[in-house]
Image (cartoon, rainbow, N blue to C red; front, top):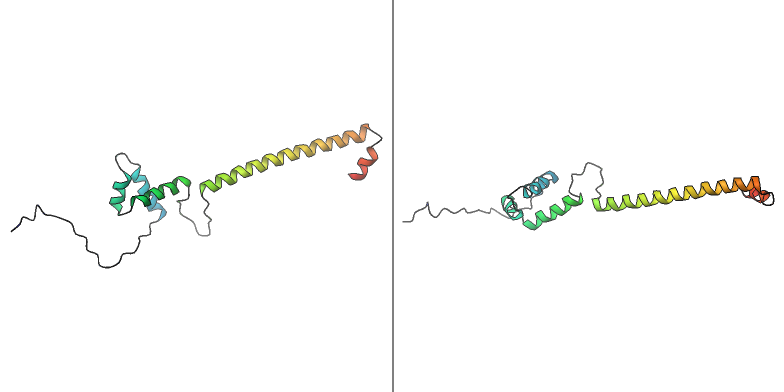
Length: 129
């Protein structure tokens, strides 16, 4: 006879093929935050939740990019990297618009100055403006 207290082993019984578990963004974020707690490792948290550690690393990258968020109905998801690039382009376009606006104002002032001071090309300015 053998002693069962020394041979306690857990056995998981599979009743059939398992489906992948779909986790909500909130669950993923909670798991990611667990990996950031003192003394916790990604592999330990992965074992606790029955997840491959690589999956948690992928979720962490998505979390850092800002693409791991819940989507509201009808909402569009844009990764943070794309948002940053779009904001940079908007700032550049605003800078160019400001520059062109200043150039247009300078040209208007030059035309007004030319109309009042130089008689020989004033009729030309009147026709074109």
